[in-house]
Length: 121
Image (cartoon, rainbow, N blue to C red; front, side, top):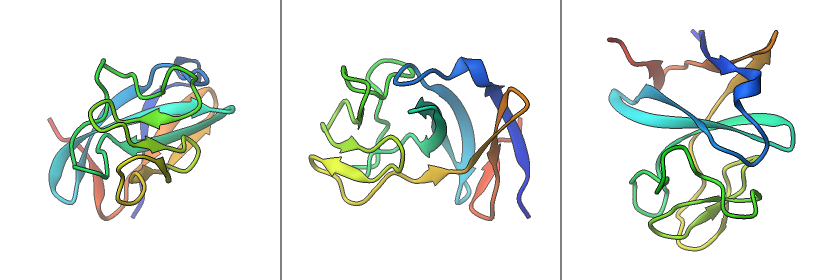
């Protein structure tokens, strides 16, 4: 069963800018994830490069390259399409793992599923 988990206000995400981080449990393991806005649409992914599974941001919440058009792994240089998470260049082995979002009434929410759950504190 899917649940909607409040993440942030819609205004917290601007095109090609800083991401909003959040924690998830993915296949039973705690992971960091991030939400971005690109061309007016919100997207979210696990913070895990597909070349070598390590976090992508060198600076906190910075995933876009200098142009604001690509998501980039600061360690490996792998680039990903912000709207799909698909590999766009560099050393990647597949695309980023997407997390479904819904933008509703000025808020962004993420969706749980069988493999993706909120972190319980």
